[in-house]
Structure formats: structure tokens, C-alpha cells
Amino acid sequence: GKVLVTGANGYIAVWVVKSFLDKGYSVRGTVRSESKTKHLTETFKAYGDRLEVVVVEDITKEDAFDEAVKGVDAIAHTASPFHLNADDPNELITPAVKGTLSVLQSALKYGTTVKRIVVTSSTAAVISPDPNPRVFSEDDWNDPAIKEVEEKGRDASAASKYRASKTLAERAAWDFVQKNKSKIGWDLVVLNPPYVFGPTLHELDDPEKLNTSMLDWWSSVVKGRKDNETLASVGSEYVDVRDIALAHVLALQKEAAGGHRIIISSGPWKWQDWVNAARSIDANLPAGNTSYDPSKATHTTRYDTSRASKLLGIGYFGIAETTRDVIAQFKEKGWVA
Ligand code: NDP
Image: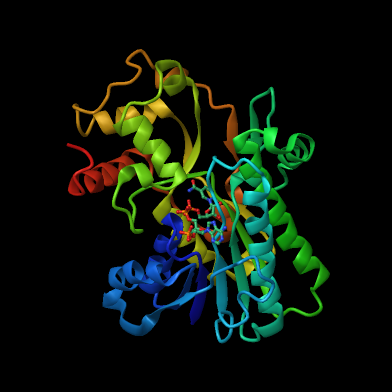
């Protein structure tokens, strides 16, 4: 089969492309400009003509993917801005929502061979602030982020702007499917990962230009830029980039996944857990908070991952393995002395 992967040059997407190629699929990847094709074709040259890279300059145009969807069996839509420097929330919301809708619109019009579309959403579209410890599931929606952005606009928090973009984009996708269900020959699966960490495959000459999640990891673990209080108390859940990539393949393969949003998460952490894992590999890395006791850490935001187990049967890397592979790669690149 042939899969269209949007935003194929992104941190997660390059691993998604690799997973599909490794499982025997052909891939058509989209990038925003010609200059972004070379790294991809070089990275995957061993796969010969199974990878094709095409340019889609502006994903917010309604007909953006009209050509790209032709002849593919499935689509993985990953392209969406993930950064925390937007002043105007629409910098994130417009490409997130319109990009998603133009993929679906083009698939409706020209995707006569398309059987399934997987959209990379996020737990950003699931979680919301809660004073009490809470286990979130696929039944939860981050409507408070949308409300905050509606009320505060540019003054909404950076996290809320991003989270609103993901929530609105995912809602738009489900609404589109609902509205057009009599006309479409495909179904939708949405993946909701929390923080994604792990080695990089995308084009990168400087670790300070890492994607948002890995830049946070690099800053915290390698550069020691977080204070002790933050290291011991701030955390989330994570999934290794190789696991979320494989989840995209499984989401296309497993019939029963159709029509579901699926949280994909390995488990919880505080920043100091990553610092400790890295320090056990290289004692020259920053020590961070030496009084942190992981057995006393409270993880107040947790995810129910039973749907992923049931529908995808996925296993997960853990903190020690992910850290081992990231540090090994950073050393190879000369980013860790
Ligand atoms: P990257 O920044 O590495 O990749 C983002 C991709 O989206 C790139 O291909 C980028 O293209 C494209 N993109 C960004 N903005 C636009 C735009 N305005 N118009 C067209 N294309 C655009 O991020 P990730 O790999 O981390 O993110 C990929 C997906 O995964 C996103 O949907 C993100 O929300 C989601 N996600 C990421 C998590 C993480 O921790 N990394 C966690 C949960 C979800 P270009 O290179 O040309 O800018």
C-alpha cells in the first residue's frame, strides 16, 4: 500500500515515514518547500523509489492536497505547528484547523482509493487543569483551552494557545467525518500522544534548533537549565518517538481502531527522572536536584492507555531506554562532550 504523510520532515514524521517504509509500505511525503526534500530522500535512499517527496506550499488552502491524495491507500496527517512563541493564537490555530480540513476535503474529493486517515493530535486536546489528581481518558476534551483563548486572545498562556489549536483541529476532523459520513469511503483514527521524546532523524545542524519537545529535554537534561524545584515537581507523561511512529502504522492496520481517538503514552515522569537516567549513563552531565526522591513524586495528570492496548496492542520504551538512545545519539553528533 501507499501512504501519504503530511509534514514529512518533522521530528515525529520522519520516524513515521521510516516505520511505514520498514513495514513495506510506499510513502508519499509532503514538505513545504523544495529545500526540505533532500534530507528525506538521502535519509531513506536505501528504500529506493518507495519514498516520494512532494511540495505542498500552503496547507491552509482548501485544495492544497488535491494532487497529493490521488492514488494513496491511507493518509497520516502530522503537519501542524508546535511551538510556544505565538503571539496571535491564530498563528497556531489557522494552520492546525485549516490544514486538517484541507487534507480531509481533498480526500473527500479525490481520495477515491483512501481507506483510512490517521491524524496526529495530542493529549493537549485531552487534558485540562484540575485541582485534584486525575486520570484522563479519550472521553476528555480540552475545551477550557479553547475558552481561555476565546476570552484572552493574545494574552492566553502559550500552552493554552497550542492546546486550543490541537483541540480545535481534532474537533474539526471528527465534525467533518460526521457531516460527510455518507460521502466518504474512509474512516478516521486520531492519535493523542503526550510529550514525545527520543532520538532525532530529521534535518538538524544545531541542538538549539530542536523541535519543541526535544529542545525542552535538551535544555533540561543536557544543559541543566531548569531549577531544582521545577526538576522535582514538573512533569507529564511521555511516549518514545519510535513508539508513536509505530502507532501510526498500527492505527492504519488495525480494523477495529477506525472511528477512535487513542491516547498513546508510556508513563509519567518528572524532569529529574530524565536527569537521573542521563546521569547514570554519563556522570559528567548536570546533577540537577540531588535530593529528589522518585518514590515520593506525585503524578497528578495520568492517562488511561487501555484503549491503545486493546486496539493497537502496543508496547512502550521506558525512560532508561529512551535516555540511553538519545544520549548515544547526542554523543555521536558531538552535542554531549
Ligand atoms: P515539528 O516542529 O518537528 O514538525 C512539525 C511539522 O509540521 C513540520 O513538518 C512542519 O513543517 C509542519 N508545520 C508546522 N507549521 C506549519 C504550517 N503553518 N503550515 C504547514 N506545515 C507546518 O513537530 P513534531 O514532530 O513534534 O510535531 C508533529 C505533530 O505531532 C504535530 O501535529 C504536533 O502537534 C504533534 N505532537 C507533538 C508532540 C511532541 O512532543 N513533539 C506531542 C504531541 C503531539 P516545516 O518544517 O516546514 O515548518
